[in-house]
Amino acid sequence: MDTKGQARKTTKVGTVVARKMRKTVTVEVERQVRHPLYKKIVRKKQTFLVHDETEKCKLGDIVRIIETRPISKTKRWRVLEILGLTPAATASEIVDNGEPR
Image (cartoon, rainbow, N blue to C red; front, side):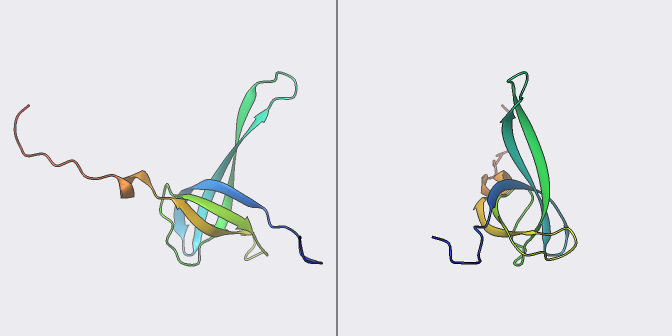
C-alpha cells in the first residue's frame, strides 16, 4: 500500500508533439469519453509541458509521463520512460538501384 503522507502518482501515455525548449517536451495525451446526451464517443486531446532531463525524446515518440512537483510555472510532469520510438527512427531506408520499372 501507499506510505503515510504520500499520494499515488498519476501516469499518462502520450505522443511527443514538440521539442522547442531545452529539457522540455510537449506531450499530447488523447482520451475517449462518451458524450452525456448523445452517447457518441468523442476524442479529447490535452497537451502537457513535460520535463525531459536526458533530452532523449524525439518528435513522434510515445512516452509515459508521471505527475511530479512543480518544476516551473507550467511544468508539473516528467518523462518516466520512452515506450515507442518515432516511426522514422525504426523504419529502414528503401534502396533504389536506379533501374527503370
